[in-house]
Image 1 (tube, one colour):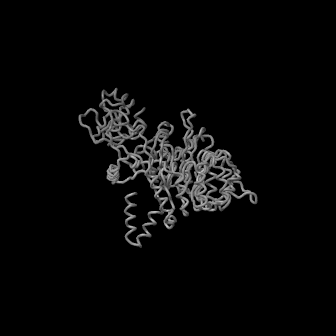
Image 2: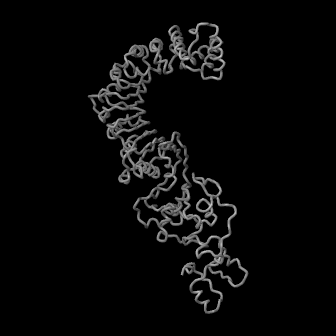
Image 3: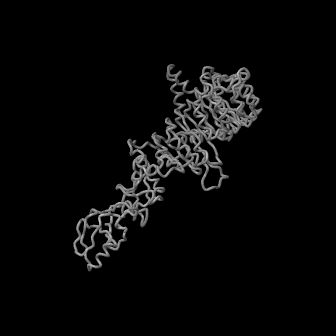
Length: 583
């Protein structure tokens, strides 16, 4: 800043060797600020205040708003007197009020800067304001090496003057709000041989004809590295794909930005397929209808080169339904990622705060998948560590809430799965900051158990449905029922969390303590929790002692009660089959 520049200017006076290096650092990029952002600002302000007291006239005191204009005048005097310093200026940055009020001084300054590349210009320069005509003439005559230029509504005549080739070095150009025909635009763009970054915004006259090939009649649309299309509803994917059919065009395009254009999500896969060198893609769209009826016919978004994707789809405020249309668009993107259609993607921006859940969960099955495919891996998605006789016929609601108890559509998604490291930046409609989430692929499984373990090893959070019956009574006292549990959070290594049971676990109640008939069981036909005895171990109910095998006694069956009624309270026998408990 100013202190560094002052010190660097002193260093330039030490020796001739230092002079050349210091002058290049001082004048290659010139920035004039209204405020001096430095730790010495308080001290410098005090010095200026003391210096102003020596003059009785208030006109001698310089107002803070006049400081940039004075510095611009000093710079103008320096570069006009010393030509070797003027040739070193490449960038000139000015405050907004300075370039709006000192247009004449700015024109005198740029007339001496023959190698100027970037300069801050007043807004009237971009809209064809007659007050900036002298400044434009000086730039066109004295600064042929301008690299960046902007044209807005009202400057159509100035844009057509580019065909006279007075600025041949323009690399970045922005066109916004112009009423210009596609043929005129192609003629102007053909006169810029070094153009590689183009922005077309709010151009109502622009359509697919700007990309059509017409050899011998009009120059073709130039090949670009970065192309931005915003608020151009007449430009569709058909015209852009026609432009990318030429090898010199598709091999160069590396960044594409689409915002409220005629290129929709339904046709985006055509763009990705015809742009093999595309590394950055940004699409912003407000949708009114969902993709629920056309998702099955849409091919996935496929690209082997795409690395950064801005997928910002929002629902229209006119849609008041319970399900927003944007949800189906994010489901379509998640389906493409699960199919490994974007293997090089590393950074993703979405406007859905729950999108990461779609990546952590297994691929979404077909809505009307056959029931036979859901029997292959029943135990893979179970919450218990022991096997159970849970089936879709006994409790289908548990399968639906527990994440379909494994991969319910394993045949349809065989060989597919999300297996790449991805940085996801998500943001809701009312949020201001992006929320960062890093997603890493889970451990790969092989063999016939691959489908059954996909839900557990792929980073999917375990469901807590019926956890009080399947994981023990300590879960019934926690956050799933009863009083609140202790707040203990432990990561499971895949982005989810594991719930830690309490240290003091109450002893399970036996059947003789007033518990119900199914108190010792998990409630869904599973194994007994806390039982140490086998199915064939017997016990005595009349004696006072209790053995290890009869720690949890089953309830008496109807047959044993009928037999014991005739024997006057004899011991009933314990059956070996678990199904006898419910007879």
